[in-house]
Length: 202
Image (cartoon, rainbow, N blue to C red; front, side):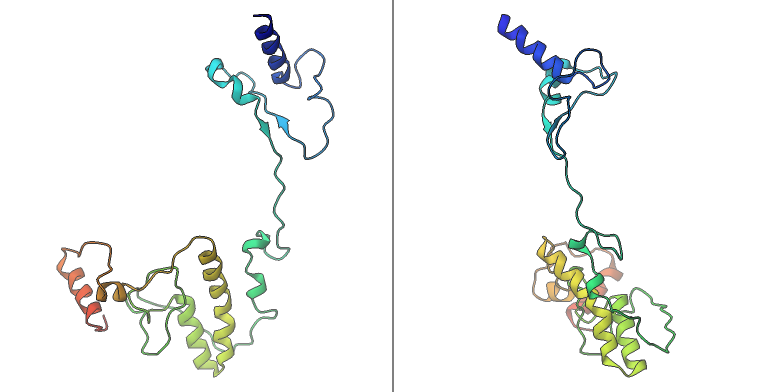
């Protein structure tokens, strides 16, 4: 019985907030930076003390901030700045993007590199890819497309390395019987699905 009371007294002294009366415990005295500290319950906390007593005594480690990019202030691990051009591209074309969601398929051999998102077909490009292709054609400079798509490629590569999955096009999934959802009952949507299966431009 005496041992239980002594243990409770020791636990209470460790849990005492720093402003409380009484002499500081060794844990409350100067701690080296980066050491673990004991968490004290918030002031005025009233809860199931029997169930929470053990939680307040758990050590908490002080986490260090991840190194950040000085240019964009994002963590260096997910920063895309190394993939951006060092100097702005010299482009004389003024590009306005007015695009209907269904009008994204180009009559080219270009396939979308935005592989972490499902597209209707592999030739349906993201807005960035459309802009890069258009500027390369108008400026007669293939390097523009390569430069503008480098951040997109880096983004997809990073996300694939950290758990993202390659998303095959809806057209591919339908043609190969891999489409995971039931076919729509709406006639208009069903017709679109049939056109995709038959490789007819929607």
